[in-house]
Length: 429
Image 1: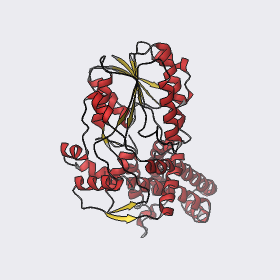
Image 2 (image 1 turned 90 degrees about the vertical axis):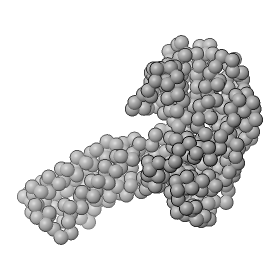
Image 3 (image 1 turned 180 degrees about the vertical axis):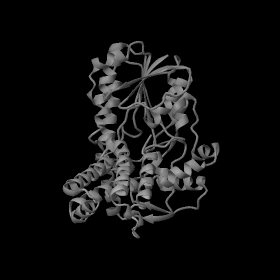
Image 4 (image 1 turned 135 degrees about the vertical axis):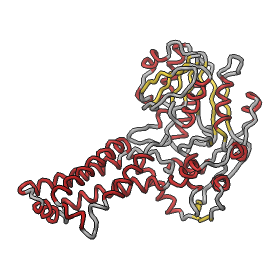
């Protein structure tokens, strides 16, 4: 079967893509950027790179030729310069109109649990309007509304849970609502069911697990799975929680997909619970709980590394970007005279001043590049090249710096190691 899948690089979308290709389906995978490698299987993958918020119905037509089913898994937590929640409403409506015109046999649409009850943020309100648009279409549609999804891969909220599980102190706010986490494999089984010819349609289903747990309970269970003692609960003041969400918003505007944002705060209050009765009766799937997930395999050392590095990652990038920007500002400010003196000592002559200015500006550009997600990788690579240049230049002009008791040349190496660590943990999906 030829299937078009949107949001093909997300947590759910990438898992669906892998499952479909493994089963021999051919997939038109839609995303804003492709995966580096395609999943292994009997089926094929054809990547289509587009922004759904900018795609009119007629622009979908060439991608829907021969497509029997469409799975819409595109989703955005919060607006940023590179992502818009209108992908759930305007973007989805454009896709659904194109599916109607192309007479696509089946449309499976991923929404969010509870949006019919409350829409406290643009995330949930746009999800709701996307659902409503699909319900009006002359299509064989199924709307799946999953709760928080837990699987072997981790991204967004599921990654945050793992990261919090690595902290010895667990911050807790006053506005936690219960969650019915659902296992990723149960979500995939649901998609498989509705791709069959005998499956019913025009249904809206809550995809929720069997247990209602608080966020704190879920994190503590992950700690137990990791083999760590329970974390000490620390009640966080409202101002601290609000500040963390604002910081997350700031990083979101820099292009980093932080799950700690004001949208998450509003949605946490709403909770993620639902009635899974219709889903279970329709599909015959009996959802499994967290203990079933943990029982499948022990926590690996890779799992523990990811959890332990989760909150260290932003520290690495903030400190490293700050290092480059700071050295650049010092070179152009209070350290300018010292820099010129060193260059003159090395024989740079009239080029001493311009060299210091050029170096300072280059440092600032690299620091700003590391701070922006879109340019972080090329900026990190440029940082390696510039660092190597500084080492060679310093060795040629001022070899005595290797003997300096403060070790300016020797301190370059741990900085360079930090650069490679940043490159190694850069990817988010």
